[in-house]
Image (tube, rainbow, N blue to C red):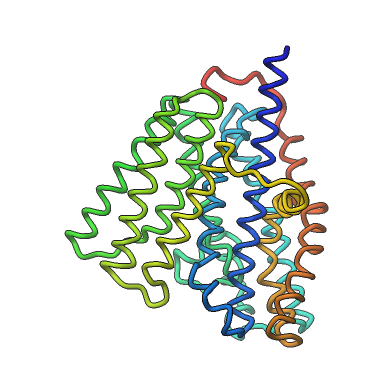
Length: 353
């Protein structure tokens, strides 16, 4: 009984740390965007650290850690897929509905020929805009197709091969990325290593979870983490050093990828756990992090005509947090509850977590 209680306590502490990391990741993305739009030149050194990239990388590491938990109570692939859809799409649809409503009211500017096109809205709602050359109506949604790709990879492996499939996935990514790096250098073709790396980050986050559950050894998780950091430093060096990008320089990729990785590994190993009010604030922001991430660009456009500089930053943050709390309470939470209600409890198969 004591062992079970201790294990439950460790599990709850890990979930608390994950929520704090989510809060930090969302705050970093918001900080990047409001600092860029504030017009304050003295914030340039902050932007050189690319906090938005840091936040997105951290989000995908976290996603890899938490997605295995979603198998509990959802032992069939249909259940897993339904719960993932209802975790992402209710808030996504709400965000687009809010955007459309504010445009219709004239509160934010519409884009003639773009935001009045039913085709553009449909493609954006399906999250396909980056793949068919359609303008994005809500820029931050570029990460959601990658998130769904991670769900698909994870689900395919675990529901076809079980734990063995996850081991193969963890092996395939470093080998595949190394092969792509060599191909890119030999062919002279610049590949989207950042987006590929987001998937790889999720796989490494999964490895950290598997170690926390006692499924793989410390040596295996350390090897996975070291290979990830090394390969992503090389891949980003190729993408933004050997090749060039119009707006991203080499340090904009190397610094945030390295910092996000080191923070994630340190936090989940119990090295870095804040206490007191910073921890409580990060826990709160972590719970509403998806709403913060998805809704702050809309608030930015709404506030832009009325404030600038630090006033703009304060106004955006002051409005985004309560809006995110409301959407978390009345959109995200009911969506999660609906997913759980639609999935009838069944005995979990031996291959699940």
